[in-house]
Length: 425
Image 1 (cartoon, one colour):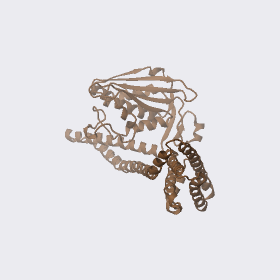
Image 2 (cartoon, one colour):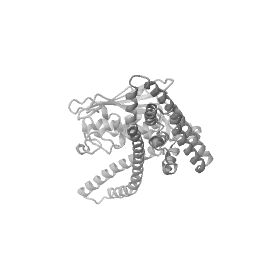
Image 3 (cartoon, rainbow, N blue to C red):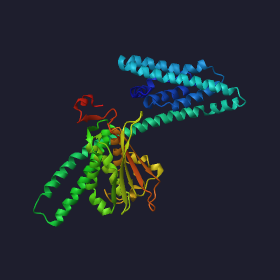
């Protein structure tokens, strides 16, 4: 039933389609119309089901026949059919009309079931009370249903605007930053420079590197949101990638006096993946473990082979466990959303390795997107958030041995060139 083209067309033709000529059916007609748009946009029927149940109960209470009640959605369907037939080319029009019929089949079925249930209730002792209750709440329910549908569409529009902003801002910032980095590199190569000036130049260089990382993250998120992410897949040894990250994080581990331990990683099979993207995933997870663990903490990285079943392929599970401050239950899913940061951002320090050093809130959203792009998943386990007792957190990343990118990911397989003809997915 989900059809975004139909939803957009219906929104654009609200005035043209008009409303019911019968004043008594006007509210139901308008609520149904919003419900049809919502089903076409999201494929979910809960809202329109509530409207239909309320309308059916009121009809029974008012002594209205089912055949008369069914005439309301039938007239709305005829209006939509007529306009689509007039304005849309045959091929896309047929797809939209098919979606329209699927939606109205659901509406008719639910309306009949709700009417029969309301009729059954009307035979019991409290039939009058039930009927009055539905009658009084009918207008309110339908009004709220229409408002919620409109609010959902507005949220979707705002989400798209945010995605567009990320893409535009990242691309616009990339060019001047590249110039800054180029000039800074030239100045760093100059031999005639006093120590004070050299220190300033190094500070600019570190700042430009940090800004470049943020912009690259923004570009990655934009690619995920617009289905333009590219993966170059080959056979990858995860232990080698994690060893490289630990070597790169050696200074941070030393500064924070953390110990790090790897367990059973050598027993894992190779997985099919994009080495650069897998490095990005595990580097972010390990960096977070360093940042959110008080000085002198412990990080354990373990691996496990997961056998395949009828419902899931053979996989590898990597767990990164720390002795840090933990994560509250209500934040465990939210931390994987764009720009989400735990606590008051004014209380956070900014940095890549400082304790509780906060970034822009992009890292874990990228981790989730890249894991899912490989056909895997990521989640976190934690007893809760506690700055004093530090219950710790365990981030789990599951990757299939044979990558299974979803539709919309541009894939190139280095170990099997013939399969590249099938891409992008």
